[in-house]
Image 1 (cartoon, rainbow, N blue to C red):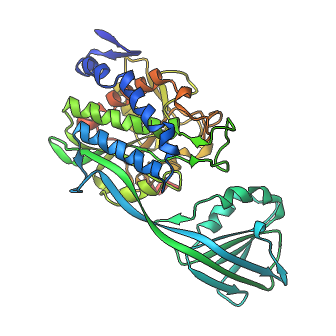
Image 2 (image 1 turned 90 degrees about the vertical axis):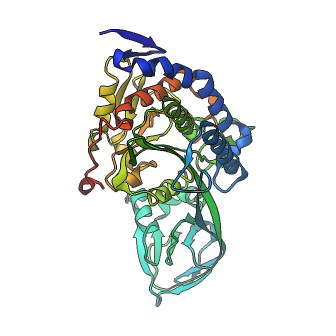
Image 3 (image 1 turned 120 degrees about the horizontal axis):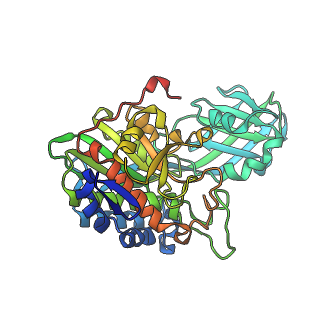
Length: 434
């Protein structure tokens, strides 16, 4: 079989038309240009609710407009806007068995402007004891819909700064209150008085569409998140340089967003998609995946044939160049389809090598996957040893731009039979999801 060499990808002759076009469309110069803009210092780390995130949104919108994407479901523009409720504590007094708890030892989560509880109120007292696994216990109580006074063993005191740094934000705020107090093991009598300032703020995903030719009501989604950590977020990362406080997020996830834009340009110019393609840049992934959760409510999951979520593809994978992994590989046959479409090339997709980190559930693919969509994240990030992850050192100079361009080309080519309607991945068995 005749083969041609394409910038590191050796492709079968069946892909000749794509091969002749793809280098011109997904070029290293264009990939670098977009990545440079998104990860620049003037984006100020693209933290949600900052001018930097607005600037990033405007840039992505301008790229979608230049490419010629349509708006999503009749929207007036590419912005998919939603509201978030923020709660900021303005006062908190806690007494337990006659002792006043100091400010540094307690953390409040509540969306009520004023609150008052005693042992005679509908508030349960629970514990995180020495020897418990703190993370799972914390999230169990943090995500509860009940009023809770959580007494945390003093051995966990070192986690307080990280928890206090959490942004208290929700798209659907509950009416309950959860108070964490570090130190006391019991609370026979207690009183809690607190006040909060509540504000509603707006965020937006950026979403564009290429209408399918023969199957316009079947959708393939390419996505990545465009938010990051902002400026000076030491609890979420470490500064590599005392003079550098900007968390540029070049790999996390300007790289994935760059790929979404490049794939939009590629498929627009190929002009052969039988299924409709949605290109989505999600916001607020770093706050809890709120952008993708909102997006998932705007589409009928039964009509979404596949979702390619692109997260941190700017560095080499553990297998080196021309490789990437797919989270939840075993949950559908999408990975097998992609690899089959790359037969004869040097590129290979692998199953997620970090199953203990539960990456399938931690990125923007998770919400649609839980609804049965074969929604997977493609990444190269070495999650056991990624030196710049959530650090100010995550800058474009640390990325392998040539390899990143090859990964984007591989995604474009491997997804071709799904976009064309030839292949339909199996659905995720929701009964087996955690």
